[in-house]
Amino acid sequence: MNVEKVIRLIQIISVLLILAGAIVGFVSEITLMVKKMKVELADLLLLFIYVEVMGMIRVYLANAEIRITYPLVIAITAISRLIILQKKDLDPSILIYESLAILIIALAIIVLRLRYLNVLKPKRNFK
Image 1 (cartoon, rainbow, N blue to C red):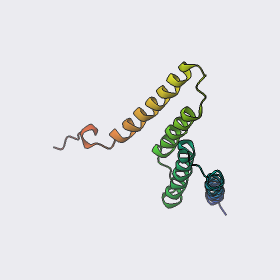
Image 2 (image 1 turned 90 degrees about the vertical axis):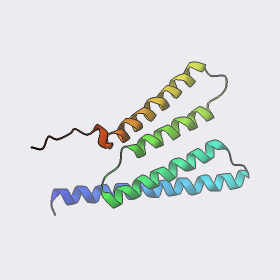
Image 3 (image 1 turned 120 degrees about the vertical axis):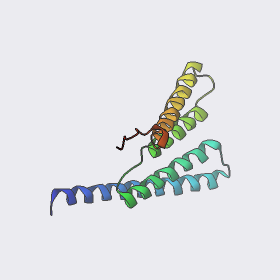
Image 4 (image 1 turned 135 degrees about the vertical axis):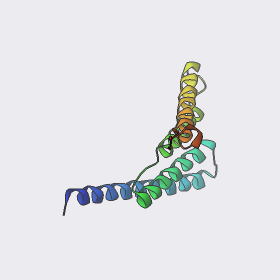
């Protein structure tokens, strides 16, 4: 067995373990919401993070690559959840820093998507 196959096998096992963890986390969060008989925005954002991780794993298993926008969207959701969960008596500058982080990540997603526009691709001179 060559090195590439061993590494690919390790990658697939690792991704399947991450998938199992995401499923367990998703189910335990649903169970916790049912026990509390209450659904909060922070809970929904956490469920969304789990779904995005599962989607990223699906794409990885299908294409053997991860689009960089998936982790960026997950990061935006995680920071949004952090903003929602933070206490009201904390320093307001923390909220500004977290908001700037979301803005920077959103701009990064826009820049990554712009690279696919035909207008921005270099023109070839055919003679």
